[in-house]
Image (cartoon, rainbow, N blue to C red; front, side):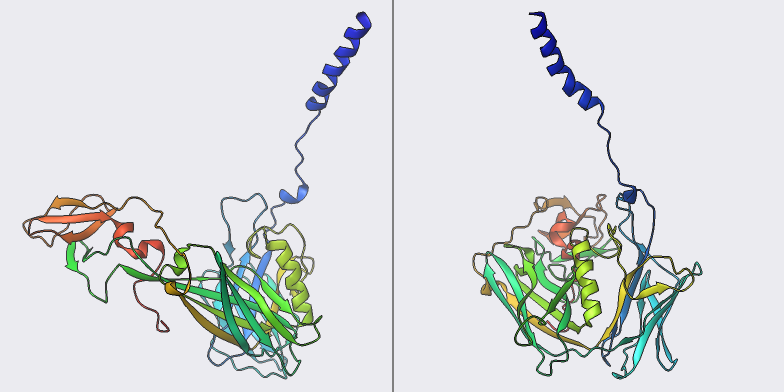
Length: 379
């Protein structure tokens, strides 16, 4: 009996010892507070499209307070092999823009950056890649809507590609207000200031790349570009996507493939980077400094398509905001004066000379959902 009790004691004691020895493991990498310079820079060879470079700092893996640190106040330029340079100007924090450029396809170019803290950076000299036209943008619905791209280069000059896109969609507020207000004055809306129909535009954030190098023909067939979830607001009325295509060098393509695997669970190159990437941009002032990004140069081709609500099947967008019930209030002697104390409400319509119906702003003003109330010129 004594022996049995001894064995039982061991059985119950061992798990307790194991638990007491547990220690949370935090890899050193997640504690490092390195804010590496991260650069998204594609030089566009186009007389119509300006080049836009984004310069920022990465964040720690554990940083939840800020998603991006724009690098403001830098001096940014592109230099060709003859020594001529083209300046970039900061349009908003961390975004640097040039005038549209017509580049010499036989010349080489490099990026130069001087930060406000004194850092000096330069890229390798690179060629200007030629980009073939996009053959077509297609879509198909299988519950969700999937958007595809087709392209080819009969000259076989380009076998590596990168794509990005901008989505624009038309949508409406739950209630169609006949009134609006500005600085306490109520007025009737018209086509110039209506708040029922809006258009919202967002840019792609994922890295989209492709290659035909392993194929028997230089053809990209049905490259996956975007997915629109079933019943999304994006096709509640009318949707458009503008896809841009860029040619890449083999080295640039390989870099973006590694970057894509690194960031597909993180968001973008400006987020926390768990692995070290080596691009073609280097610190001149501190050669050991890590710089994230790859400077590319190419012409750009683009194509836009539209998808209307009546082209998809069983598509039922439902507004998921708060209830949109209207409330009636008595007006001032001057019915066009508005002094309702809750700024979360806005005028809806007059029911009589003495009654004004109001509703929550998000119910009567489509702009509260991120869009603008002016139709885009291409719509």
